[in-house]
Image (tube, rainbow, N blue to C red; front, top):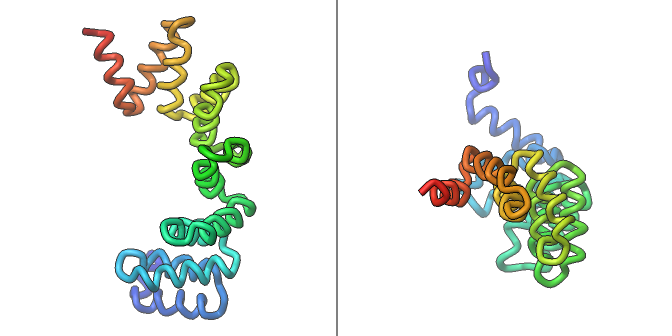
Length: 191
């Protein structure tokens, strides 16, 4: 019998509230998540309390919440989360830095890629593509190995002149993974 079968939602909620009030950062995160759809103000408060208590994911969420109206505070929370190992925070900081501080973006993407993020690998490919084709291809290949359809498509475009069969195989792989531009390109080639 599952936990929800034994306990009513109200009882379970009260237990999480008691744990949160006792300082449990994970319980605070849970309460923020539970309130997100019904009470945004309460959700933000629980996320903030969880972040202040050291929950890395809550730090990331607070950073996202603050981005539109408090960018400096948002960045502080995102950096704290990234520095504590949160991959999505690393990627978000990379995106924020990409236009004006590409070296900082590259460092954040590399941190996330080292932890296995295909999105970061793909973003590194994008970052290097205009200036260092070989490095871009290397990052796309790593992202392809992690099943990233966008990387499959970009790698196909970069390699199609030198390896049309390999590029077609990548387009087919990307199309099978649901990549719309790959499907379109294959359909155009068949017409």
